[in-house]
Image (cartoon, chains in turn red, purple):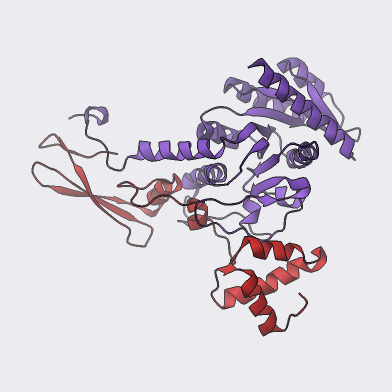
Length: 133
Length: 267
């Protein structure tokens, strides 16, 4: 995407990007000759479309991380589980695994815990009296 | 007034460069994968995921390293078929480790990121989500390919959902069309739907590895496997009965592994 200052016939340069937090995006561009500044304003749908491509208007300022889009946009509901916690959960007999998982997930959710680790599981067991689960 | 291509100063957003970096990331991650195979069909309910999971397990039992990427983002079933815990995976840092399923098959699935029973939903404006939802799903597929530490694999099977959309996205992300294993059931309705998918695969330059005719020997009547094999000059590599046995899957794995060795030798 490029912006042209028609009067000067000059390509405008990117200034700054703002994300007001309401799903919209604002990006400014300035004419290097006359100094005129214009803002590109996108509605939430347009912003989302750009976001879904995994690209950033104005260029990347930090390297991309793994599963950036999935983490930012997929509604996952409950907390995440670390690999060790998953391994421990997999050792719970399958017929009660769902119930046990829900207990830990509810515990984490109520306390604002975003990732369940074996340490969190130990704490939950002690607090909730779940020894043996 | 000048047009886009007449403006020669670089676009600071560098969108083309960002897309290029995404592709390089996918290529780097898949560099250790010897054979990438898309398991697809034009028809839903023919058992693609079932075939994918059991084929991957058989490949692993034969001593090859195997992985499954569950590209059915809206109806992920691979974790269940590979006996992977339903607990969600953590995604932070440089790369995500795939889960290890039955027979040591590595796998990644949207099912590992969602609560049990929860549909795939994205943050974003609810109105007219059809505009961006498809792009979100394609982006998730790209991250499954580019952000998972697959390591060295002999086979990475991609379990595609019904229809052609995910296959086309896959071709774009990979930059090269993947080899395709087609699954059908015997009925003429399945044949007609699968034919369209196979034709699209041929049009995009995919190598057709063969046809798996699933659910054979029951109430579903027809000759879809043979019809498609004749039309596209590819073998029916397996006819899977309602109650398939491990040796049957092992034979299919051996056949595909053999085909791979032949292809490697021919190069």
